[in-house]
Image (cartoon, rainbow, N blue to C red; front, top):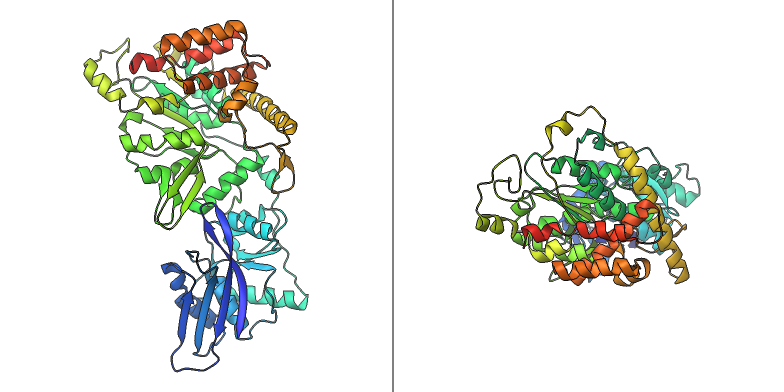
Length: 535
């Protein structure tokens, strides 16, 4: 007898619906013959033992017959343990243990234990999105994945804990007597919850120039590099940067949650990523760990930092090949990983914050300590960060050692809440500008929940070259200042666009529509430091 169930497989950050077909010969053999076809990986092939044990411990008896499991489409590789539940249910249906005969409106995913209990799996949010796109109304999944899947509106999520619960749920559906209510999660309420941060800028004494640069970077999503001696507060400042970032919008939260779900780092109790990610990998990380990789590619640190912050401390200590792979995601906002069997793209639109010493000993240009490094030593050290990578960093600032009077001063520093208010106001001005432009061009789209949203530009740093020309018009005097800076400092065309984006952000922080001379001058100032160290 043939019986069908629906499941899903995740590739990259998207899921595809998989048909699980079960057939048995009806001839009782002395030994069971169980085969799985449809390009299964080792985890799927091993499901045979888990499924048969779970069925037996749930009180069902399957006679030893020839069983064939087909996972369609057969030309797409299947991986993971999430096919355990649909295979078990299809087996029960084939042997007549279910009242329901048509499961076309149910999607089942979950890993089975030997005792028949269900364990959560990775990538449930993309699976829920795929179910909604396919028009499948009911999602039967492990209880540990329930809040994550319930974020998607338009899909009924039924959390279950065992194979018996699934059997009872499906039988009740067949008889029209379902009593279990689907789980509901209000995703917008999760985003609006009060966000509490462990670090605050009021703890940082002095460093007003660095704080201003970080505020500009946060307001526009710009990359920033801090150069200074040990103990000047570079890491301390970077750890407090998330406390002034604007909150996630729904579309950003959904994209970020999909990546964290696929990578298996999502907290099952949250359901939705509500804070901008902060990733700070150690400098011993490999290029595959940073960008992503594997036989079946998985997202790396740059993708886990999508819509958030990637902090690289002691930047020259990272291997050169690891730093160079950052070029594409910094420029395009995506990472493409090609393998012999497939090529997958992961979103990687993050804000880069990096910190480094000016020389091997760390005290070059420090007024209070002597530097013992020779010019060739300094040049070799800073040259570990290549010019093309440096050109993709919008803001370069020097973080000098804090003076004693500033360190012991009695006046309290400005806190993160005040800075964040200005950053959020600047982000709202940017969002309104992009929404208006999208409406004029007929590019307004809808969210997965049905609410309207702008196209995928949320900050000034993400503007295209065409948008820079539209939104960053300069006066004749500002044009002259920018032209002089380009000629004197030998800046590239990429640096030209990034200066305009930073100046646009500075104007947004001030709440003015036109980019003034002082705005362009401050943006140019943030590009001069690399000429001092990398000249």
